[in-house]
Length: 454
Ligand code: HEC
Ligand code: HEC
Ligand code: HEC
Image (cartoon, rainbow, N blue to C red):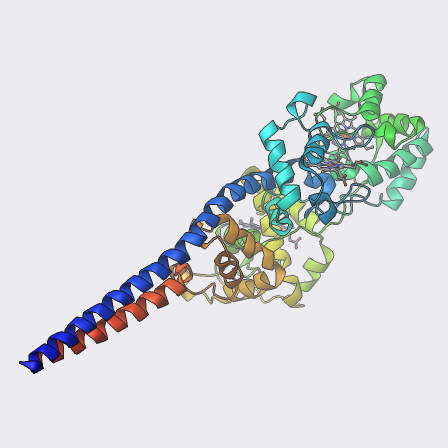
């Protein structure tokens, strides 16, 4: 009888122990979840606002305040810790009303700008708590990286040629000024960019000198076109007006595009790689080594002689009279820049002489080597760490946004080959559950054998 009692007691003890274990683990699990849950909810709201603010920054502010808020030329930095400490009201006022007598425009709808009160408060949030590395990635991914340096050098020979035109020296001075102050927005030869209109076309030439003079002197409210009377003397402004009105006499190429490397992120390089293999590899070879149909792009000579703007121009306009299509009709500028960024990363390892792929360039997918993929991974990791972090923060689900988000983001570089589900596992919880299960099994099997013995 005592033996049965002992056994029963043993089983009761075991069950009690098991129950206590479960309670302790459940409690630990709850505490773990709850502390992150509140934080996560708060972070989510903040993150949504910052998300929005990053795009607004890319569209409206990066051109003057720089890719990562570092400032450009005389435009101040916004990623400045002292600015983040500035009272909310002061920042709000600066952004909504602008700074009178400077090129900082008013952004509030009340003052003729494009932003709502809510959007301005989001911008204040960005200045106070933004992730500037992620903001820089956003700017690049939207294809809005500002041209730095802002300036370019006029072509020496063509500039000399301009000197022989009537009133040549005025035009020469205006070209030099345009290359120093206006080219970043109004583009090479004044042909426009995606942020500012062309000045070199018949419609603008038709405008009166007065009209043009007024726009340059006073700017255009609510747009990026600043009042240049702050910076330029009246005779410099009238020189710009002459240039704009007589642009049809100026030889093309007098004001080249600034030589600015196209900025890349992990995301843009991946996009470039996909677009290249979908659209270009059948002629240029899977790794850009050329085929019988088209020349190699992955060779030293081509890559060192051709800057990013030139490659962008070739791809956009095609090569008339050859098989090279004009891609500007079917792809956005962002797509084309992603491809150029992808092609550029071959430069470090490009061979002096390319060995063209034979046949139709690549063959069926299962016969291709995957070395393109390997190169890209290595380069991606080296180019931008922050790219992966931005992706992590942008796509991270609620539960992984604190602490673990960073770990995942950083890991994405090396573990590109591990499946996605692997990276989403919540390791502390998984380990806890495994421990719980193994204890439970041990106890149950012990209890079972004891019962069986009886
Ligand atoms: C056309 C160029 C330009 C654009 C575009 C621009 N800014 Fe500015 N911003 C300036 C200049 C120049 C100043 C410095 C004004 C001064 O001297 O007080 C400035 C100042 C500021 C300041 C105050 C900095 C300080 O140190 O006091 C903030 C904040 C600011 N800008 C935010 C923004 C935001 C947000 C946007 C986009 C919505 C933006 N800016 C767009 C040119 C620009
Ligand atoms: C920060 C970018 C930026 C810079 C730098 C800039 N502009 Fe502009 N400019 C613009 C934008 C944007 C517009 C269009 C404004 C609008 O939509 O009303 C514009 C419009 C103009 C116009 C009116 C064009 C028309 O069709 O009527 C003239 C003229 C002009 N700019 C001249 C200049 C000159 C000259 C310089 C250099 C001294 C210069 N801009 C520098 C952004 C810029
Ligand atoms: C139908 C075939 C074909 C396709 C598809 C094609 N290209 Fe080309 N590409 C050519 C040919 C042919 C040339 C050489 C043109 C010439 O003779 O100057 C060329 C030239 C170029 C050049 C200039 C090379 C040099 O040495 O000057 C670049 C850059 C280029 N292609 C990029 C691209 C990109 C990027 C894509 C995909 C978006 C692409 N090409 C798709 C046929 C093609």
